[in-house]
Image 1: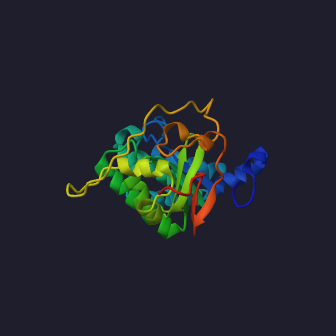
Image 2 (image 1 turned 90 degrees about the vertical axis):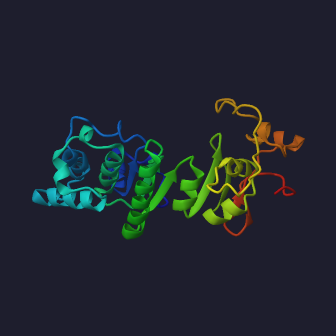
Image 3 (image 1 turned 180 degrees about the vertical axis):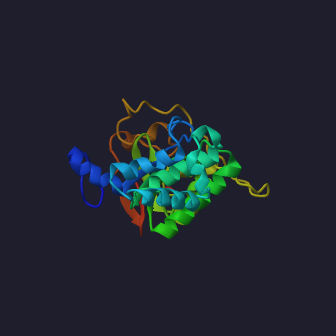
Length: 251
């Protein structure tokens, strides 16, 4: 659903208009850019498809986007192999911004980058979000990055939502056993802080044949017999805080 519309039921022509409003930043900045296209062609492709900024206006817009993401206008004549991983991801971000979207899916946009470069890209996304008023769905497994950049966090396991809460609330007051285990595994950059690590036993079940009831029950230390019988509903347990667990006597 996007702005109240089920996009899976739109025709190709209707979907084209919606694509202007929804863009994506891919995980791998090495594989997501066409090596045979210049930066100008990569960023300008979507503008051409949607008939935006014709003529010299398109070159000016590409130069503006490159500067916005921390690159230089003269970079538009180069090819992807001439850039570092962080620079390529900046090109990917500029491409996503080319059609002035309202919503961007950032699919693990920093997982393929060095840690020092990750911080630069995350800060860039945060600045762009505030400057352009963007809504960003940031997908990641690095909990520190998620806490830093996100206003609200959704925790998923085996394709099911386990918990939803504001970022600060979820990190300081987790209410689902899976969230508790995830946070216990996150490293803390302070040797004086001791965190009790919760080790999940067993293997992740197959998504094709998930367990009955709660999909997390086979690895949950709080599981009871009813967990195998009841599929827990996502319910609000505090203002803006939701969890999918039948047990209220834990955490």
